[in-house]
Length: 505
Length: 72
Image 1 (tube, rainbow over the protein chains, first blue to last red):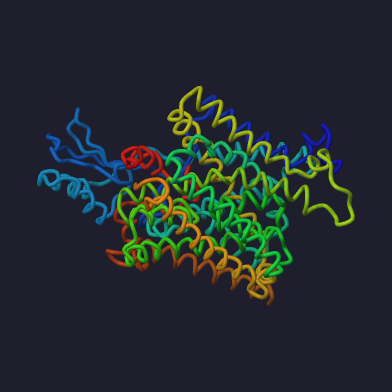
Image 2 (cartoon, one colour):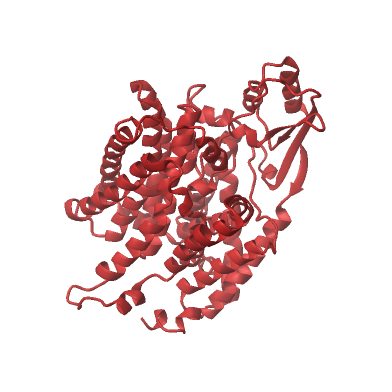
């Protein structure tokens, strides 16, 4: 308790350091001290392409009358009317070229797109120096905290640098265009790389000194708080709120009771992580909940692994099933938005049903995402109040709960409140979302989570993971919980988007 | 001998990961054909990896388009 209480804890506890690190990164982003944080790009055949951004330009004097650039490709293809040129940013494949040719029936335009595809891409900027700057600045900043917490910062930095390089390799895997299409993101590859090292040659001690998983996760979560914007809750009105916010808590409570009382799973932390991952939004909810209830690393690994695999399966098969039974598009979209764990997979699956379904699915998921903060807070309080209390201990008072409460949650919720209710009303949501969150904090948070997952892999071994799976209870919990989630969300989607409760959409 | 075994296991793991990358880069990973979601993602340059809504670069476009959907 001593380390967690009093003013001393403000510079000794990891939780508070996560808050200071998160606040420092947010302040630097708000003051524009550094430019955009470096984000690796997509590559198709050559992994080195991810370090550069590319552009192609081809002249097209007259804009076709029926030109309608839509979908995700609209981010890449632009027509510059002043210069009379088509500009394409990024790498292009033959199938994308054919897709863009559909944007107009004009033969001149189609030929220009073909020429654009065959013209060599020009490298516009390189991010290697920026990446190096991020690695060094993040390393030095966290080393200050490591020193204050009583550890050797030089030993930490030696491990940290290698872990950061492993995180770059994890991003390299997830940025390949086919792998991106499958939805296997950095979390999957970072875990796999860490596990490969720890379960074969073993993680050397100097590398483990850099694997400060909790510190990376908690700092990342404070930054994640800045992305949880409460103004998004009403984006789809009452129907969206009904599907996302009514079903989700019901599924969490059901899964927690099912796991602890019916399956009699020994680890309540594992049960709540799987429940949060299944019902809220997969990996990010699992991370937030695991940190809130101080779960073991192999429990988080297990929950993340299951959710990543099932997300890919649901992304592939749910649109097929919805089309097969001829379900109403809006109902199917809301159903997928409420049940598929990751946003990228939801958008991809939703777009299989059409443009309108893509929007509904994505926004239902977004409304559900906002619940991460609420769930993490409730879990942290519940754990501090009930679970961490011994059976014979007296009822904890408010101070006792505060001592046990994971303090980084204060930063997480605080960032969310400041961004939602102070910064957005003052500066506007466009500026805050594009210039602060997208340009800086979101990317740095991604790097922190990625190095955290490499660290988790480096600290885990298959024997511990196997012991968690004994009796298959975690998988059974996931399957039963997800099945309950599917049924309940379908019912709610039918009521909300099928014209029963709120009128037809 | 034990050390050698560990290095062999590690190398085998690296080879498997390398082969996955090679297969993906050469387009030799099944994508489900024209009607499948993977092929659809590739054709439209969709990124299915974002974990949360703020990670998806599609969200601003989708949120904007939402106003077109009228509650009837």
